[in-house]
Length: 303
Image 1 (cartoon, rainbow, N blue to C red):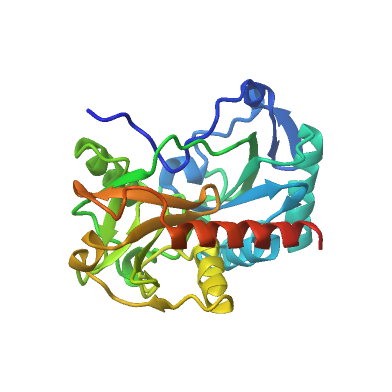
Image 2: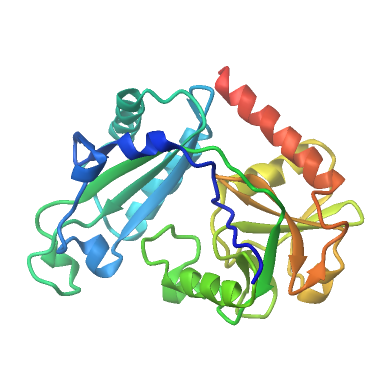
């Protein structure tokens, strides 16, 4: 069995045992950050989340992340009782309490809260939402590029569960990840309902062919902020980029493949279904986009 790895692999950091966590308006120790077994997030996956990354004192693309969080809450008809400014205030309070300055990752989670009885109806959540922020020291550490395996689990139609929604209900993606690991890969490459290449279980997916950058149409994939930044960087720097349908045939002989996400930014892919991609390492377009993204983040930090 090959050595296991994931796109969220980071350096071990003992300081994370002593982090402070935001929970419903209070800053508490890690071992005190607990919620009820009646919480709708635990019981039913009824909630939404957002991931953010801290670079040199600045939460990158904070406005975009707040837009996505509040869009998700509106979509599931959840009022968390805080304004956008209140959420940002909680984020900064948690950052200050922990003394974070850079290389930190925050996961915001909002659920419908504690239920009166252990059943599905949202009206049983009567005590108000649960809002927590987990913030950790986090520096990505990938000793090699990612290996993918195509799995039977699909990115579904928006009338079932819209893949654009960052919901707590991630079982479909978890099952895809398990299937990929059983096949000896790190993550799953998921197709859409029409059989076109879409995304992985955790990240958005790009290929490079003859200098052109391709990604899916966006109809069935996560509403990735890093994904959009890469598309925007391509357009601003005269790199041909296309949001289009493409198949595994197009993918297997791509010159380069890479993943995008808040945690890992741009992560190279070396292998898909046992087929080496390009030279098996980050290619020139991937490296150029990685540098352009770093410059974009640096500009954010000085604004």
